[in-house]
Amino acid sequence: MRHQTEGREAGAPRLDAAALGAELGERATLVQFSSAFCQPCRATRRVLADVADMVEGVAHVEIDAEARLGLVRSLDITATPTVLALDAGGRVVRRAEGEPRRAHVIAAIGAAVETT
Image 1 (cartoon, rainbow, N blue to C red):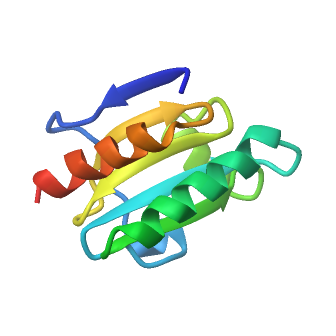
Image 2 (image 1 turned 60 degrees about the horizontal axis):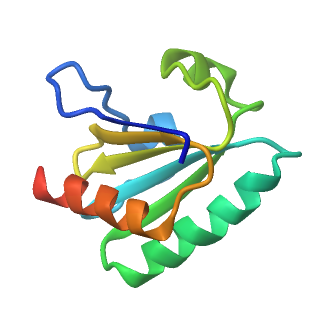
Image 3 (image 1 turned 60 degrees about the vertical axis):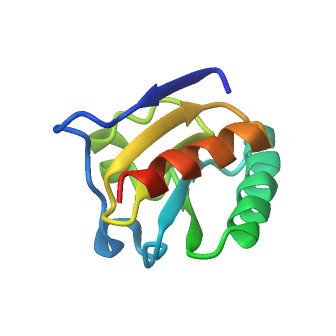
């Protein structure tokens, strides 16, 4: 991951099912912004899907950044892949750009789950 931030402050964005176009996970949601020709996005998809499958109540949602430019702009997404870890209420608790390591994804889920 090239850049990782925490979003625990009161102003951290919240996303709901309508904004994502998919249901939130019961415990946490991993949101991946991808683009069609992004090679690291494919590897990111595998890592996030594998981790989401390992942890009950965690969903993985992939969003085509080119198709959802309004959402991309509102969240200041500047690169793909960008991954957001959301808590059960849809609040962004972690954000990272670049291909994530499995350990970082698990830590992000831990941070999302402990906020609920």
